[in-house]
Image 1: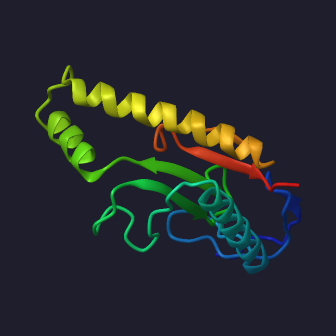
Image 2: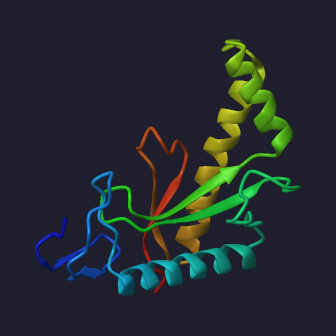
Length: 157
């Protein structure tokens, strides 16, 4: 189903002005030029954070392999409130697995769950401060599906 042509600004300063198809879930992808802009901004954010000393996790296999944890940079390429650039801290696989095991075992008072939550919270604060120092405008997610994630709102000047 094609949507009518429209032109509007997104919160990344992009203008959406192309007819795009809505997918089977009701999501409309950004126009190709906007996807390119979003990907370039994501690459710039990642490069700036690597220069600042953070490790960026492989996008192709973010939770697998031998990664000891680090920052995941995600470009959500849909024209909706969840679209944009998201940064998520990933703890070491041993802590992640211990947390999952405690949750599956319904041991909600296990100290590992609280520790993992505090680590994510502190890393989100640190990453937000780093982005500010680098000139980016960003905010902590209020999305239940992306707890402790950071959304990049605009590019460094």
